[in-house]
Amino acid sequence: MPAEVLCTDNDARLEPVDDRIRPVQGVASTEVFPTLKMEELTFSRGTG
Image (cartoon, rainbow, N blue to C red; front, side, top):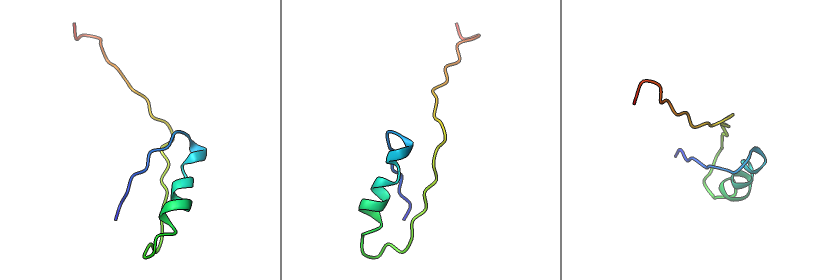
């Protein structure tokens, strides 16, 4: 079952996996895919 966990910073991303997800009975494995950087882009040229 895929799950998405959003964390405040890179150091905090493994804590929920190690402390809450892996100990659950029946969880065979986990994979973590970090998002390197998220930015909000705003394009206003030519729109008004």
